[in-house]
Length: 197
Ligand code: HEM
Image: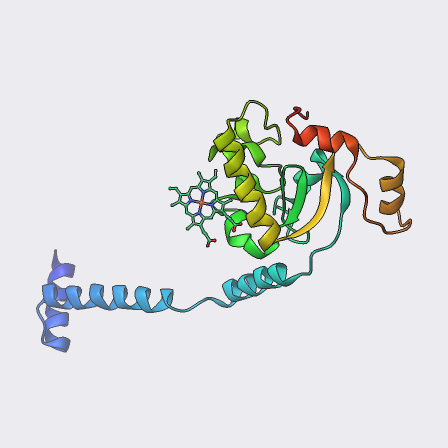
């Protein structure tokens, strides 16, 4: 108690303020300091923002045939890889919309996937994260078509989903002749609604 009395006396002696006024001012100064600090970006955060921008600016690279399993790796968890998403088996580079599809983004669950069914149904249910469009109504298919048009207009198509690699696409991947592959028959069937594993 004696310590507290000495403290309050000292505060009053040196500042002319009552202890209550002194501590109120101290608290306000602390809050002001915190608010001002939050208005500036820390050096580390700045570097992170710069890295994110570099990611967005990278040119889309043609991938050719890609399996669903391979596509998963392009969900944004590896910043050195582009962000890819598929609609009706067509793969688009959505890196420029990292704020939507990147980690923590509202539509991150679609990245690295064929999101046809989820988009047609306007669903975030993980069970709808599939390219299987079987059993959809005419209006749902129309909604999906609108999404496809939006993606065709906004993003670069970089490949197509295939159920398994052909020897031709493997050759292209291992440094053979870089070529765009014709849509394979099985892919065509898949987008018509056949479930992929
Ligand atoms: C409360 C409901 C929702 C609101 C308020 C909302 C709002 C928005 C907004 C403001 C945008 C940005 C549009 C732009 O700048 O181009 C957007 C984009 C998008 N939304 Fe939603 N949304 C909602 C629900 C959904 C649902 C249910 C889905 C699908 C399951 C969905 C899928 C998308 C996709 C894929 C994009 C990005 C399109 C692109 O890449 O440009 N949204 N949404």
